[in-house]
Length: 155
Image (cartoon, rainbow, N blue to C red; front, side, top):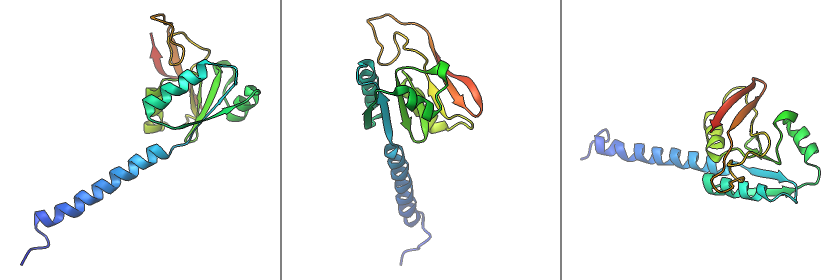
């Protein structure tokens, strides 16, 4: 007769529970909705979207809009942080050429008072704005009810 409390009998349910938890976490990350709004005449937006697709293994819905100002106003993007495209992912606003690693960090950490990340303008060397080996320094700014802060810096 086997002992139901033996270590080998307890490992199977524990392993099954851990696998279910891992699957649930993976599905939650994949279930995030990625919607990018862009001006149909802007080419760098598609380059950036490809960076996100590859870097985050995400499917992105792309919506073209001739009135990007209205979208940025609706999503609460501060005027001085605006760029060429706006993405909404899992309740956060991503403005401009924010690297995939920073978006992943935002979704993982979910800092209080942060409603989005922005890279103002279109800095050379940022994802989607690659030009040979040329780069310029830029910052990823977190914004929201907690104010603004530097989320990441790139030299």
